[in-house]
Image (tube, rainbow, N blue to C red; front, top):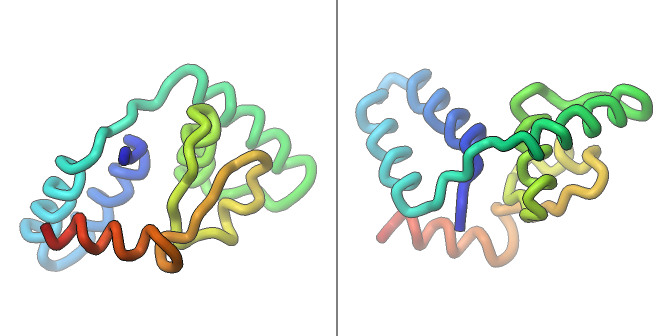
Length: 114
């Protein structure tokens, strides 16, 4: 399993905003150590430009970080595991799974507990 670099930055941001910064950062760092961190690429940038233009023409655009996360996942042919399905569902060609339901919930909880 892997995490996109931009998604990891969102986790670090959330950890920094909480009162228990040190504890939260440790949890994020431990979680990240279990995964491959995928760097953002030129191919992801190209997908980002295409997705943004498509969404601006047809539907409501997604937020900047979500746009980059979607572009990165789509450019690599990866399934994006998220609970924010409604936001990402607007991105054409993006493979999605909701981590709160189905097979991912148990797997992620098991990883965090081990």
